[in-house]
Amino acid sequence: MQTGFDSLRLSQSLRSVLAEVGYLEPTPIQRHAIPVLLAGKDLIARANTGSGKTAAFALSILQRLDVSQRSIQALVMCPTRELSAQVARECRKLGRNHRGLQVLIVSGGQAIRPQSEALARGVHVVVGTPGRLLDHLKRGNMDLSKVTTVVLDEADRMLDMGFQADVEHLLMALPDKKQTAMFSATFPPSIEELGRTQQQGAVRIMLDEKDESSPVISQQALVVSSEDKLRALYSVLAVEPGKPALIFCNLKASVATLEEAMQRDGLSVGSLHGDLEQFQRDQVLAKFRNHSIRILVATDVAGRGIDVKDLGLVINFELPAQPQVYVHRIGRTGRAGGVGRSVALVLPRQRKKLGAIEDLTQTAIEVTAGIPAGTPDLPSLRTRLAEPAEMATILLSGGRKDKLRPGDILGALTGEAGELAGSQVGTIEIHDRFAYVAVSRTLAAGAVRRLNKGRIKGKRFRATLV
Image (cartoon, rainbow, N blue to C red):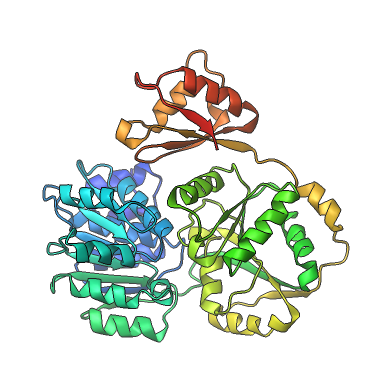
């Protein structure tokens, strides 16, 4: 099959994978960045979330990788655990034809010993957060002497979060002869300075944000009092009551308060904040991706790396202090040329902040004073929104290490004497030692019984609803 990637000088193996996963036409950032990266040049590029930047650098890394050498050849730094996991998934997906490829996530919130053991066995690509990467480096667990490519993904966000010293320490530990690529949605002076000191002759790619494949996001703001915020929020959610929505708050206490209020009102909601253990974060994200929960409330740090297909709505329940943070928040919708909607709930005293956001995004925000006339009262909105999610999530005690594949689990649920049709099984997300399986909520209890009674690949696994 001929695809738009044929002109980018990627290997036949990679082009075959791209066709298999449905990547037929490169996005603008991929068209411009892949040739530069394949040529081994340093790169600094403006790239929003959903622009296809992850595939751009992953493909370039994979093309230049020597899998026969069990050494770290590429290092990708990300601001959060969630984004690290997303990047690693993309590398594994696109590298499925690279027999023996080892991609390791090195981030906080998980035990350090398994990471150390994996590093000792040898890996090809390491993706992680600066703090944990530096921890391994100082412990002598990580040999970076063979690294040929280093990528700073969402570089502006990393520096905003206080990682600049860690990033610079890691870069100094790498060989002098290496390729350094930085991707950033915004370009504050700190990014420009980092590029000046850490790159040589870097190619700059500054695509017009109104490029045809850039996110198309309608931006609205409702100016309301604190007392009216919950009703305003519910009125926004009620426009498309069955669709997923991501809501941002500034503090984890605000996230907890809002989640509790929505749960009391019967809404299908979960939350992400810094107090969650990694397993809990993974579980919440899996349930949001597979539509077992409809609404996710998050802080900025916890919300980084959220990658949900067709997320149509992002709501700023609290307006962030910095316009750049607003840009990152709304970038979760309208991905890769899609159409998204962003709504900010703004207190009257915050109205002037909208001007700074408009200046940064070069886009007008449609501002409405107060809740529109004709909006139902709060009890009516609660009734409209209080519906259970379409799907439920089963946690299965086996995963990649048990050689399980999605087809094995699907077969166990839908094979002979199966209680479910294929259309009643949703996303199957397999991790190293466990898997999440989305099934129709009305049939979930029966699916759990079937999995607990049966075997998959001759083994018994424990299934529970989460």
